[in-house]
Image 1: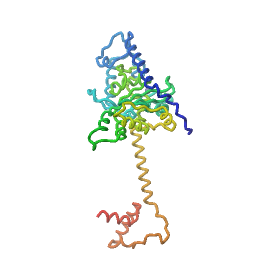
Image 2: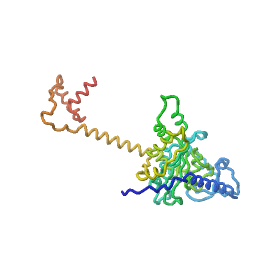
Image 3: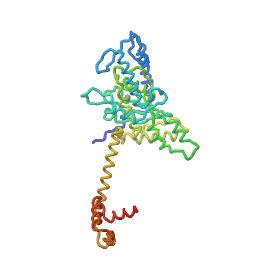
Image 4: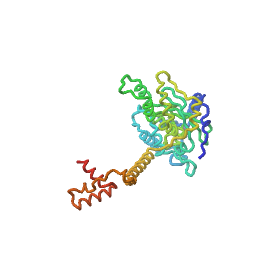
Length: 377
Ligand SMILES: [Zn+2]
């Protein structure tokens, strides 16, 4: 396959913070306006729980597969969906304090409970798009526990790239472990970086998919790094399926498993005492993009079955090596022959035959077998 030049795929680093801030500001402004308009159709979480809303509000849903007015029964389904989702991300219904989600959970839930696109289309769901469309994500700056990633934009997006913001929730404890006075418990920055990138995170993306389909889920799941969204996605995602857009899925993968991110985080931790901000230089980004390939997005099930296959392969190889014949050496290179009848001493003919048969079954010589028995004594 031809190697494509990725150098310009993410554009200029300069201005990425302002770009993200502007997009999020616009999002917040439009959201306030949508709530303010007369007969707003935003259906807030509290209205669902109270089962009370302004009669002027005409509320519809696509629950059940077609567009129709919301009934009281729908409210029960919405509530159950919220409980189900919070359970899925490991949240106790009553506990609002335990925040965050792990990159592993994001990848697994994207696969196990996907928000599917219409059947028959080119792409199945967000995970599928993350694999095939969003081929690049790089950390470009970090301030304290917040890492900013840039990703390329997929086909239908109006933007040329997207900003994904990730808060590493284990960052503070990593810093205290890094500078602990207790030398025995002190860890290396690379070890800590590797731990926090697999730990709990909060995230935000400046794309419309996150905004309209997933921001509510991030809010009720306690892992929104940006503006909270209290309006239930009753039209776009009434069953609360999926968990993250394709950009976030790509970022979670690179965060969790790419070497580039590990190095970046390690550097950020190393400097933490003197410098709160770590930025990637444009030259470094361009250079890395030249050779960077997207990390494979694998669910835990896929990893497990791959590991099993590798184990089986190793076992088979080992077995083959055991049965391999010894190289043919010239007579003078051979180790002196031991008396072959040594091991048969004191054994009956039946016992000797049994030993031979066992050795054959195990694929080893009788001498080896005898040695094993002697070793066990
Ligand atoms: Zn996105």
